[in-house]
Image (cartoon, rainbow, N blue to C red; front, side):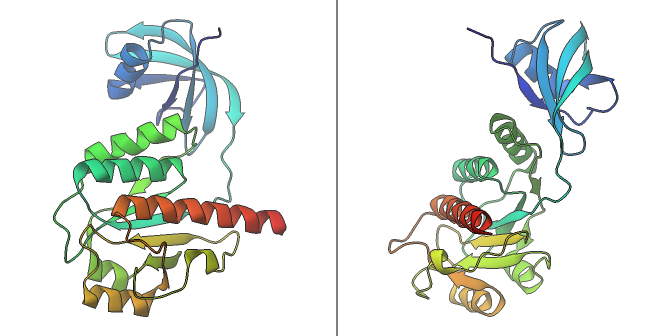
Amino acid sequence: MAKHIARIYCPQLFGEFFYIVESQLIHLVSVLKVQKNEKFIAFNEEVGEWLCTVVSVEKGKLLAKRLELLRAISLEREKLALAFCVIKPDKTKFLMEKCTELGVTDFYPLISRYTNYNVNLSKSKLIVTGAAEQSERLDIPHIHSETKFENFVNDLPLNFNWISAVERQISKSILDIEIVPHMNYGFIIGPEGGFSQTEIELLLEKTIQVTLSNNILRSETAAISCISVFNVLMRKRSSSD
């Protein structure tokens, strides 16, 4: 049986020869067990995905060589954002991991009326990086700074079409939204305690509102449902054009 080729995110992937250091070195050598003269795959969002080989391993650094371009970066890439009210750390980890696998490019952590937690940015970056490596993405999602809910919704990033999941307030299903290919979309998900009435009224004013289910979903379930359904709708629309 052929050995699985290790795959890592590598910001240093520039030029024919490059060094891998610190946490990536530990991951590649100690965890993935890549040795001298063995091949591995490295990628980043600027140069794409490359087949590489280990030239030498020294204390604190590894010298590698690019061999072959496997996939180039597409210059025209739509963005998919998820603005979520922060939930319990283990649930936040699950949400960010799975939504990275599903293609989210931008995470916006929000602090709402019923939010009781904060995002650990350094741990979150490790989570989305690992998920991108595993799911064979060519980019790492951007995790934006935590923002108060009201400030975020009042000043929504203008390069997205924003859709909010507001349960029991409206009857329009996510399946009924009009998806336009080659445009950026963003979804807003509430916390474990739900949105306050003031927050709901703000969403009704500023966003497209949809319902996801006849049942009330957990925050992480709602996030994954939104992104999954959106991907299906986008694929159907793109194939019909």
